[in-house]
Image (cartoon, rainbow over all chains, first blue to last red):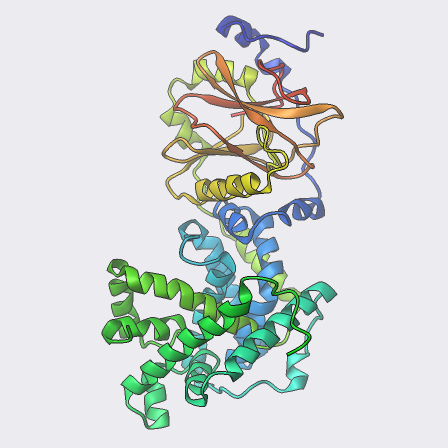
Length: 229
Length: 231
């Protein structure tokens, strides 16, 4: 009846207490939860995962899982091992989300770092390292992403691959063998018959150069590739 | 740049260090701001390399396995009881609070008068993320409504409502901080239905209760009872 009370004092408040609390509706069906999560940044999702929010983990997987698996497969060259790497990495996300520090890395970068490290650990253990690119048939295998995702991924891939091509061959080789092949610096020094210091310098210079190349067009308008180049 | 242990930043970002080097570098990283900054930048580059890896898509079963893993594993969420113990006063305060209090669960679309300010909304979102990610924050379940109130050590708080129907036409949700018997408005917000995260713009003192009421659009100076949710 009186739906507008002024909180005059504790007494009034007490009398209003329990019986007046309105029940909230039933929990939403999962798709509607996900729809709302779609508005959150990756970082906010990680924060929710830190609070054991399973829906937030699902949303993170939907955003990053495609790239994560592609990366793990490139390193491991094996469905089962790549799935293991991604699964273990996401379990790591679930367990350690509270330790994530947004000032150190984007959430997607953090997740991909976990996936990559796991993949590298596995590939070293399995002794199955290779650094050559995947063939086309392998690349196109698996479920096809949505058109929107495919467009974004395709564009980003071309942009990064284009930047890689602009590196001096020696730097590109060091980075690809390390990142996609899973070779450590000392293993590369041995394999290439070069001093360790040379390998370290190539990796350092290569990443620094890539950073410049990617930074040039990453800041703005990355959605509209130049049609005239 | 590029000498000695600093140079390991690249190898670290590429996961190309041997285990002993990795440990050594991580110890160094704790104390070297230059390397920390460089690593942040290099990790963005390796993140880009991940996108360029060009591998195939995973099978849909992988997603289910990951979610099953998460479900099977109980995460460490602070049990409600533990915060209750921090608030011996809760009996009295809660009574009042509950009267005013609320149960929220929104993604705060807007707070106060920042309805159209994307920037303010983003800042609020970042602040909320920081509170939610703070391992030292305490989580308390709402006494009314489904959701939780997360309070960081400094009193920064975020209300997470698992489900909050949109406010009726012409109405808005309004959050209140009730300390003793005095409710102070913590801003109005909308809900699109579903889960909502509401950053509380003022510090929530020990013993205070956060509540949510339904008010006329524009907000009210005193809460209309009953609350729809309360901590």
